[in-house]
Length: 268
Image (cartoon, rainbow, N blue to C red):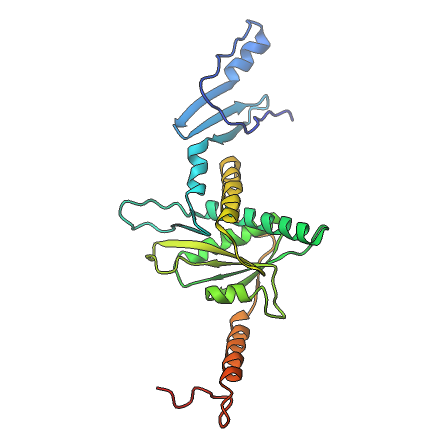
């Protein structure tokens, strides 16, 4: 069955009006093309194929891409995840988070390949989150984006920021990278992402690179967010192991001569 589609290219300025001859075939093609301008920030091109099906390609210009770039906050990603904040609209949406997570997954794969000098497989990334109510829906978007990039994902559940970093080092976990979903001290309507490798947190230029790639993905993706996870994350009880790790450090450093296993006994 014949069909036609348009390529995703940015439209700038005012193009010349197409010229059609009076031949029946070209007249039919002219009638089949419909251009509608939904807003200043996007152009929707509707092309009707010979089979009668209608396909839509959305070409989003710089204003749409800047929505993703503006989410960068230094070495983190921060945004409004819930309605209810006066004067602010929701911008940290599941589609935006999925694009950012996918770009981070691609970034870590590329970094590991460069470091090891060979292709890498089974790159592992963990995700922890704080108790914010937007965490559940945004977590699905993170896992979907990482899966798109080809990463294996692991769900730490409720976690702390230091725990996410330690999940890249502490055996038997030792993931290649980790993401902490939190907005620290900001209001409940906000949320964000912190990125870690075994070397520590990402730098501001590295996060800028990731957000720039995500902006292009977000602008040119017809399906704005995945609704299904082909590779569900594996739930792991990392916090139990991390808590034991911290307890062992405290006991070793205090080294109490009488009650070694309860070094803080008697403290008030």
